[in-house]
Amino acid sequence: MQNSKHKPKSLLNITRVAFVTALSALSISAQAGLFSDTKKVTILHTNDHHGHFWQNKHGEQGMAARATLIKQIKAEVEADGSSVLLLSGGDINTGTPESDMQNAEPDFIGMNMLGYDAMAVGNHEFDNPLDVLMWQKELANFPFLAANIYKNGKRLFKPYTVFERSGLKIAVIGLTTEDTANIGNPEFIKGIEFRDPKKEVQIAINELKASIKPDITIAVTHMGHYQNGAYGSNAPGDVTLARSLKAGSLDMIVGGHSQKPVCMTAENVLDQDYKPSTECKPDQQNGIYIMQAHEWGKYVGRADFEVSDGELELINYTLIPVNLKQKATLLGKTKRIYIQDEIKQDPSVLAALEPFQKKGQAALDVVIANTNGDLIGERKIVRSQQTNLGRLIAAAHMDRVNADFSVMNSGGVRASIEKGPITYRDVLTVQPFANTVGVVEMTGAEVLEYLSVVANIKAGSGGYAQFANVSMTVTNGTVKNVRIGGKPLNKKKIYRFTVPSYNAAGGNSYPDITGHKSYFDSGYVDADALKHYLSKLKNIDVSKFNPKGEIKTQ
Image 1 (cartoon, one colour):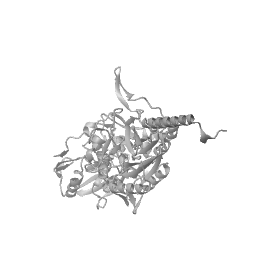
Image 2: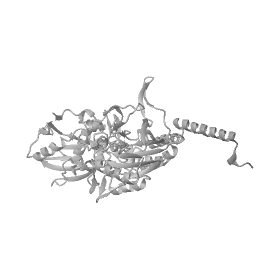
Image 3: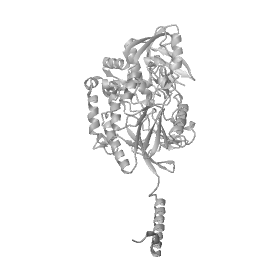
Image 4: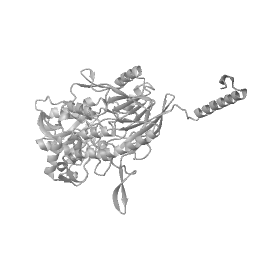
């Protein structure tokens, strides 16, 4: 057998040529990207679910259809050698009767089935007693994240968690709006601190850099997106958070709370009238992407990223509508048609959630009244101006306890009621928080002092007040020309008025009047008071509740 150390010269030359050729081929392939170290990851996100585990009456949304969409995306992404992380911006609680009556159990079961990886703790997670929230936390197969919520000097939830996806270490930090201290039910948040997210996120980032050294760092937040950082009377939101950080310390913010699609038309200019299925460009502040997918599971946000040589690049971003429809006129008839192809409902998720949906249907669907026009409770309207529904609710509370006038926070009005039959389900959708009607008796002088606070709460916030049987003029913050029941305010007279128990205890930065010698809790739940009033009237004439300039701001 010939020794390989003594190969003929010609054979050695052939070997050298082959080796050089192979090296050249490898070089060309590397330049072409065949051996590139580029890694891909897709972030899916939703926020402000608010109990919408079931599709609405038009066949839109619903967790069963969302499950099908997420499965399709995961299959597509994994076939491309990538992977998925599914995040929620919080506020799973409060919004539909079926969910509220069952402490959001179907919603968390659905999230488990859909494969959520983590969620931010939202302010509405505190709409229930703390033991209910802790029960929900145990029910979920994913972590509740909040780096800035403390009790007895310790974090109440995990501040962050780390995932391995596509060979990347991805850190996810949770943050909750400081406004929870003002808008949360005082009874349920007693002793809980909501610390400055800007400071707490930096602490978390430093901890992660020292121990984990993540490739990607995400903040999943429930703080709100406010155009160009203009948050008004709200607590600072995602834009302010991003601007407070050192460039490169955070890669993206997956947000919630302000309940709108974050799609930009230009730098610091939000698309205020985003249309489903159209292009969506996320905000970018200080090199940090900011994303939010409206509310109620109307969309699934999809962000496709590539990481190459340590650099993160957003390749594609889209908001995918979940069976959203638009009105169209066909052959002279108006119908609702799908904006995109229908997404079929996942059978297993549908079967798991259906029993929850069926519970209590008989009671919820009983017609209690009829209205000859729309009663307006849409968030962006009711929090900025007097509306017929806000005034109707205030009148219902006033009627239930025979008060002289009524004050109602617009944040407690969660939906509109369409023209036609009104069911108990509609009532519970409009008023889902189960606050009770608080009652107090004050002198006219005290009333003027009280109104000088609540009438000056800025429009746009949940504290913006709706009124019944009272009129006034607010000029440069000064309240004057107050009339109650059409008569000028008498500073010496005693007036009886109502305010939701939540606000009576100081919620929404209202004066805490629970210590007033005359204050008492009527025990009437707000939704039941509204139901009682609607049942009493039977036929609602919206013109009687439409605002007629009773509250003038100059």
